[in-house]
Length: 356
Ligand SMILES: NC(=O)c1ccc[n+]([C@@H]2O[C@H](COP(=O)([O-])OP(=O)(O)OC[C@H]3O[C@@H](n4cnc5c(N)ncnc54)[C@H](O)[C@@H]3O)[C@@H](O)[C@H]2O)c1
Picture 1 (tube, protein in one colour):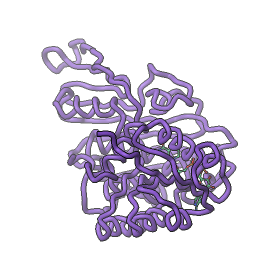
Picture 2 (cartoon, protein in one colour; picture 1 turned 30 degrees about the vertical axis):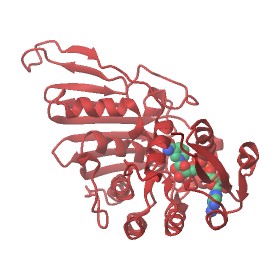
Picture 3 (cartoon, helix red, strand yellow; picture 1 turned 180 degrees about the horizontal axis):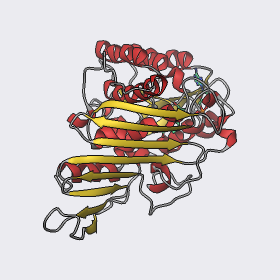
Picture 4 (cartoon, helix red, strand yellow; picture 1 turned 135 degrees about the vertical axis):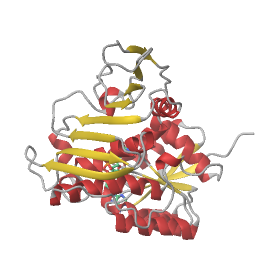
């Protein structure tokens, strides 16, 4: 039986809002019926949707089954809280919020209203990530010993003519929160973070570059190096083909995961292992795992439809995304005090990414 498409309201019609609008239009199960943005009205014109000046007006006045929130980071928690208190399920862009106190408040509103929020850590919906996780969980690389993550690129100056220079922005909250989220998803919860950060090249109030040293709950050790001002080929966006707007370097890895039996690179899904004994005198054999194709943002929207229809629980809920934010918050604190910090999970009692 054909379903009636879900009426989606889009809050925030900037860069990410434009992407969401395209995917909503391309999905037979969704239609864009309302847009809220105080300055941008071209999306409502292009898609024949009703235009509102702000999210309060959209929630109060539009007939929508769900909303997608793609506004600046500092507005996320208030906007999502307002929507779910009105009974409207949300796809909320990452980061879930800008500090753990406000995210704990949102997690409690989700619990008291029973209205779902899916957080836009879209990489979790990418089939290459699903395949990497399956390989790791099957024991293909044994116990994870160490992981090395990279996200290094150059964003144009024009990108920073906005909220992206000050509090609530920075490469940690805008980009590396994705990498930390995927590390949690593939490896496990992070128990300790050390970090150094720099704003040396761009000179903004927030960091442009960061280096993290991570310990995971099961004992694995990791590093994550990121910058939005480095001329370099390593990072999910350049390596995965996930978003064609970025120039691609498909042979370069953004995540190298080493275990007791073997190692895997992501997104290539190249697997190294010793055919016989574990011994550095023996050559490692290599194979490429099958690389499934598909779009993370498209899959995320399909999953969101199932969440709105009550057919699925969010793959990334508020408490779960809060743990990725907790790693960012711990990194900022660790860089400030120059000591290791344990990510704080107060108020984020359910569920862990690694538990799913
Ligand atoms: N998942 C991803 O990979 C990904 C990629 C890019 C951005 N994002 C996230 O998406 C969000 C938006 O980022 P962007 O790059 O599109 O920013 P942007 O500045 O291009 O767009 C934000 C839009 O929100 C509008 N806005 C501001 N306050 C509003 C309000 N109260 N009500 C309605 N609209 C309001 C602004 O006018 C602007 O058009 C951020 O949280 C960012 O972190 C996620």
